[in-house]
Image (cartoon, rainbow, N blue to C red; front, top):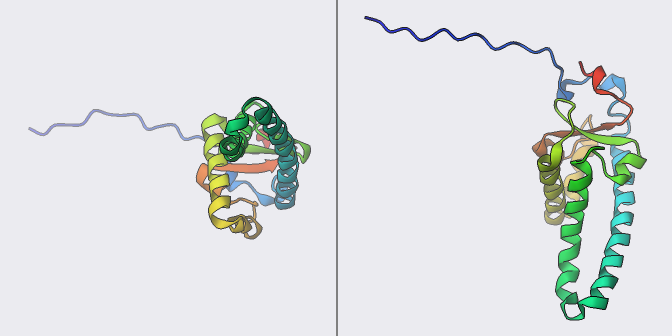
Length: 167
């Protein structure tokens, strides 16, 4: 006697376009490379101001630990700044907001804190180990994506493009 497997319904097919298949002619990726660069410079100015103020507080209260904390603060501060802002409600750092950019996943959703942490950690590690040369990949990519964007599964898009255009 031959056994038969139970019937299983086929999963429903969803007609949702992902950001990966987005048409480049709608403007969602126009000028991404230079906008990301300027946004990064804005963010570095903000982080420098935060770092200097923390360094002054560190000298005033923890004078003996200054040398050790001077090297640990920036790495921790940069990753926390990017993770909190990209993973938060606006899906963009302050520099990205000033330049009209935001971060989205393949489904046009906000990336969340885990993806934001992975993105931030990969960004700073890749810069550290390649002296920033890995960022040149964005110049040869139609969507201005860097390697850390591809690995984390996110896209940087112009903020004026809404998720309704994706569907």
